[in-house]
Length: 396
Image (cartoon, rainbow, N blue to C red; front, side, top):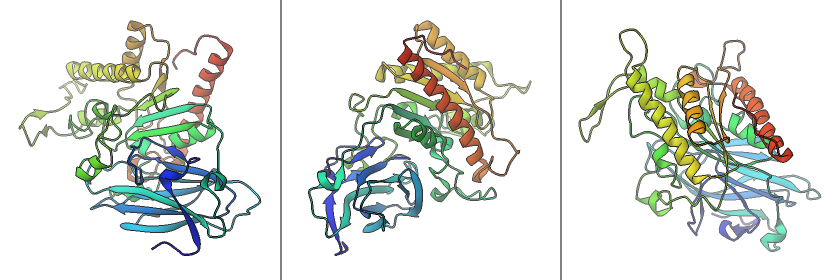
């Protein structure tokens, strides 16, 4: 039930709403599909409420609340529709930026998983038009799209090192390299990520659980009739949000497939596995298949983002396929005379500090912070070179 002490504005009627993440044109609410999807508003109201609707069968959605660029809260969204007070008590003499971001990824394993934003509310004495309550924000100078797996989702950034349960509560945006990079560059951002998935195979050799086939849709791994109604299966219109940079952080799960049992397709009975030969090395034909997959994905990204810089980053959980990825990037750049494709070798998590590792054996805040600094420097150097009219920096 709507609290009586606030004045509500339907989310689709707020003209100065800034939306993060790929979403659909679903008219009655704002669907939040991906990690980091959400909204921000600038207001002097000093208090903000949100009417959220959630559903799930297994994996509940979590959200975080940010005020003036800092996380101030994080909570699980209960099933059903209800009002949540995001923050209150701020000075009405100043403009404050409120952000609500979805912490959990698009849950491909839960057809019921859903999160909608229906309305925003401010104190009842403020009844001006939304354009006066929510002020127009300055346009961000750069747009960055991040494509990745559990590392980009932020799995392991919540919970202690000993926590090993696969639950949505261990996914977080706080200290997430993608969000930190975007904030450091004052960038608008989209995140497309899925735990366990890869370029050509998932961690357990499932060739259906890969990101490239879903890249041109809004969020097509969100299965189910309801998600289809919400627009998750729709084609994504790349002209409505033109990326300046596409950062890809994939390959970790493809390497995991080399070290896990064969997968049998329950529908066709087909068996498949990335192989380690008797000499302890990856099978050459399988490596060639992987390299081709990397090149094909770069091609798909380039077709849909003709002017963007594509930066493939890799190494936060080991560098086993780094040479193959770097080689594929170099080959694609050479064959297509494309100077805007780059490879970046990332530092792996270490045992040097308690912050290097997070829960579920994933990179912790320390590793993410180091990567964010390096990636921010890389993107900033490319932007500086373009502004100066010089050639773009060579790949790392």
